[in-house]
Image (cartoon, rainbow, N blue to C red; front, side, top):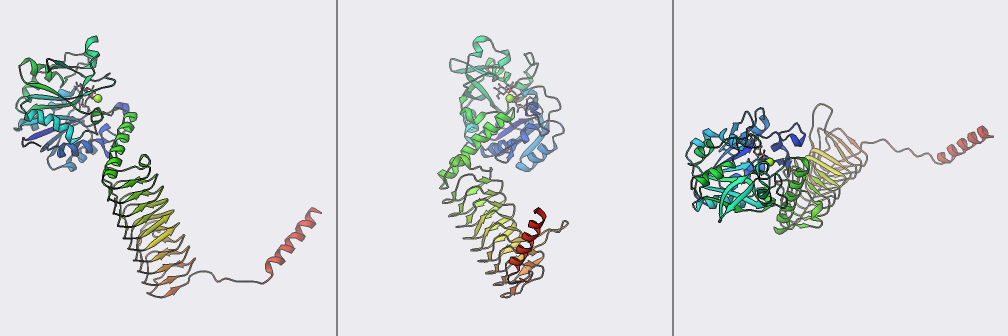
Length: 452
Ligand code: UD1
Ligand code: MG
C-alpha cells in the first residue's frame, strides 16, 4: 500500500456503561471474537507495523488479548477518562519513537476495513499532515461535524459544541484520524479542554493544524465501516453487517448457501468451494469444511474439521475436536466431540461419540453411545475399521472394538472385542407361548369383580 512506517493507536479505554455489562465494551464479540480483536487484525492488515492500544485500568482480559494479537502490539493504561486526545497521550512512549504516520482508531468500531484505513494512509502518503476519515451520516446526531471551507477541512465541531448551522452538516467524523508522526506530539500539547464536556478532544487537533497552515484533508469512507458500538442494539447491528459480509464472501468464493440469511459464521469459518450449506446452520469458532461436503439444515458446528465429500446433519452437532474423514456421514441427532470419524464411516442416527476413533467404513447403529465419562475422568473408545456396532449399544470406555468386529444390538460393551469377533452383551430373550393371553384374562376378571 505504502512503505511509510505506521503506528496505529487504538482507543479502548471506554467502559461502555450503556452496554450494561461486567465485560469491558471492546471485549463484546462480533462473529465470535472481541470487537477489539477485529480492529487489531484490521490495523495489522492495513500495514500498521506498530500497534498501541490504550485501555482502562483493571482490564486484564483486554491486556491479554492485545498481547496475543501481534508481536508489535503494546498496551498503555489511561487511568482517568479525560477525552480522546488525553487517551492518545497515554501512549506517549510509543509516539516518542520516530514513525512516519500515526493512525488513531477506536476499539469499538469493529467493522473498519483495511481499505478505509488505506484512504487515510494514502492521503498522508500524498503529503497531508492530518487526514480525517469522514462519512455521510443519515442521522448526524452525536457525531463531530467536519467543517470544510474551499475544499479544506478547517475544524471538527463536536455535536454538543456546534451551532445550529453547524449541526445541519451531515459530513461526520468517523473518529479515524491520521497524523504525520513528527507533528502529533506538539498538536496534542496544544489541545485544551474548553468545551461542553470539559474533555481534551482529539478532534481539536484539526483546527489547530489548519490555523498553523498545515495540510488537513477529509476523506470519505462507507458509513457502514465506521459504525460504533455503544449499546447492545448497535452490537447486534454490527453483527448483522458482519454476518452479511461473511455470507457474501463465502458465496463469491464458491459456497452454496440456500438461505444465506439463516446461516451464521464465526470470524474464522473456512468453507471450501462446492460446500453446500442448507438453511439454519451455525458455525462456531474454529470450523473448516472441505469441498463437496453438504451441511444439512439445523446443524451446529464448532472447533471441527470436515474432510471432502462428507455429509453432516440434518440436526448434527459437531463439538470441538470433531474430525470427519472423506465421505463420512454424521446424521440426525448425532453429537461428535473430540473424536475422529474416519473416511467412509457412518454415524447416521441418534448417537453420542465422544473421545473416540471410528475407523474407516465402520457403521455405528442408531442410538449408540460412547460412555466416556465416569463423573471424574474421560476415557477413550477405539472402534476399528469396518466394525459394525448394532443399534443402542453402550460402549463403556476405555474399550476397543477391533477391525471388522460385530457388536450385537443393545449390547453393553465393557471389555475389548477382538478383530472380526462377534460380541453379544445383553439379556437373553425368553418366550412363553400363550402367556400374554393368560395374563390378560386374569386382569380382566379381577377388574370386572371389583366393579361389579
Ligand atoms: C468521537 C469524536 C467524534 C466522532 C465520534 C465517532 C472526539 C472528541 N469526538 O465522539 O468527533 O464523530 O467519536 O464515533 O474525539 N476514549 C478513551 N478515553 C477517553 C475518551 C474516549 O479511550 O478518555 C475512547 C472510547 O473508548 C471510544 C473512543 O475513544 O472508543 C471515542 O470516544 P467516545 O466517548 O465514544 O467519543 P464520541 O463522543 O463518540
Ligand atoms: Mg462513541
